[in-house]
Length: 314
Length: 95
Image (cartoon, rainbow over all chains, first blue to last red; front, top):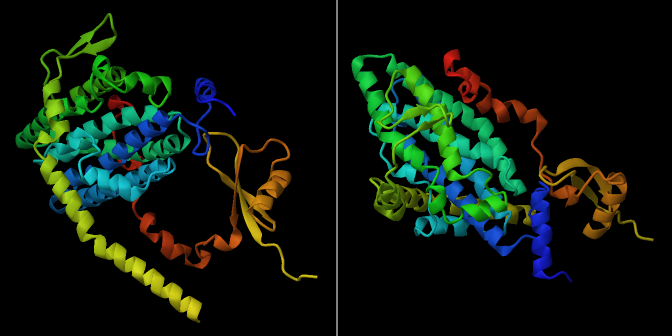
């Protein structure tokens, strides 16, 4: 019998050798718990993320943009399902995870607690929010836990359409009437900072980061990913003819990166802790959808049982 | 002499950690344990796998090929689900 210490040593050696961890492999309890927390919160974010966009399905400006938005929201639901299944390989129950979301025990990405006020917000979400999510998720395609990595590969393939449709909306509005251009600028003004916060607290304040990097659950730090996103996005904003709402934003030739202004972390913690503009509304809508859907789940189960009984009787 | 036959099992092999189990074929075995051992002998003689799944073939529910048209119809006309549907100017670069 190997001691826990020996098992942990072997586990870390596997990680260091880039061997993926699969559900039946031995893993430290803390690794399992970290993954359950991270994957379920990721799943919750996909599901809650449907709400701000769903807000615009009935008011999309054309049939074309409506079917596209429907397809995107449908993808987010699918992404939530891939992730819940990945979490379930770690021995948790889906109902349990959903319960944790509804009671507020589990978090979801704070970005979805901001309102979608105009159609340009749908463009900004696809471009910036999905853009930031992609930066994070591309990294996670190489995460050490097999089922999570495979779910991420699937998701990344689908996300590309999300970002492109968002940028297309921004392009159209940027080249539209002065009012449309103003709407696009206003959306960028409101979504820019919350999008930067999506990468999480700065490295020196991030409680889970060091261990996650050692276990190769994450492979880049919050600050690295944030910088990567900014460097990629600034030229895209310039092409749109829009101004990023940061007076400190400036190319730094020595660092070969953009310097940027301070992020309001107080706002981030306020939103995470339930005080964002839409936290209560999001949870209310989510719980309502779950409760009002209960009869459908019950009816399907009752029907399946009835069919089974008929089959056995026959 | 019993006329009862060993049931059929479907075999799935993971060739290496990080990859999905993939269906490789089927075999007969009296129980799950024997199915795993037989799968090792039939499908993994040259280190083809690091993990084996066996499932009773009778437990697999398959879609009906005759109904494929109707089944996949919802996906056929939705070209906007593909990234290439959206034109991103060259100057913007990869997205």
